[in-house]
Image (cartoon, rainbow, N blue to C red; front, side, top):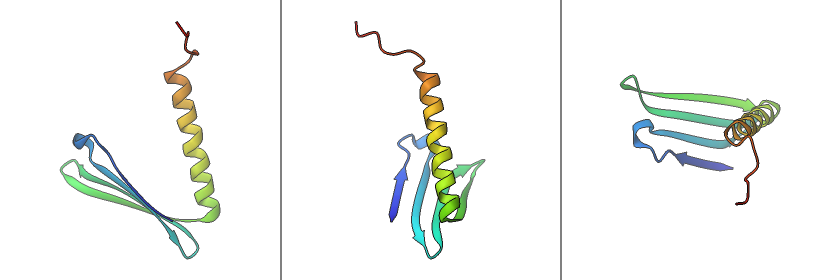
Length: 76
């Protein structure tokens, strides 16, 4: 499992890389410019931690979607 994404907004350039590790998943989140300096956060997660993180991210995305679109489209 390998993946990588880049933001399209160059004012907040970031990268996300995910790779299978021996005991789970390695996640690297990079910011090219945080107060003028690059920063990379590396998370080595076991399978359970990776599942918990995925569930939390999905829940947060769902909550944000409900706040952004609190009512169904009117269909006009």
